[in-house]
Length: 262
Image: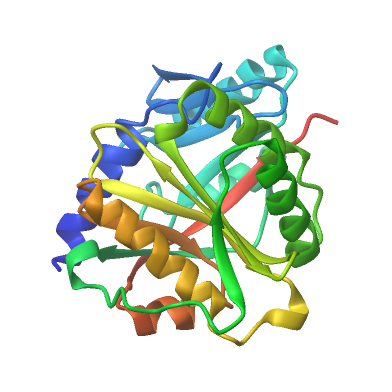
């Protein structure tokens, strides 16, 4: 895989050419940025920017305009900054404007045809598709226990997607008997070449048994069957070694810069 060419393709397909990630969301291209305005419970933020070559004052003016725009909507929002974005000091400028960086992750990409997709769940684990409210409840329960965060936004997003356009999301929960122990989802953007793997998490007592690996392989098989060429993951330090072994390549970093009006 030509890393530079694939990263350029990812920027073009999934950032500059971004599509709304769910019902009610709108993607706008204005003032050198591509941004999404969603509902209060949806994702709001800047996906891509073309700021290289601008004077410093002009870069700061673009940042200020995004703050003004989302404040006008009454929304917290995220500027999704990638390691190759320019100018090189954009992160510093975002912090100076009042943004708070969250933990850095690694953008990892693999070609579906190059992956080892034979990983099966360990004995006693069933992978169950999430297709209704009961399944979403199971998935949200795992997410909250695995990550220790409130998952009301995830619940809202999944229910809306399953109701409006179920072909754009694949969600799955891993069960040990009746107990949900791991879950994950995959976002499928119509016409794109990349399928996005998101939210893979396992409750602490069940980690290290190969469930996460099986969930990646399960979603990868579905993506390949639906004609997607690449898989994309924003990988944490915990998931990156597993993805390395499966055949994913690290192409750059990504850091969410969050702005919450005071």
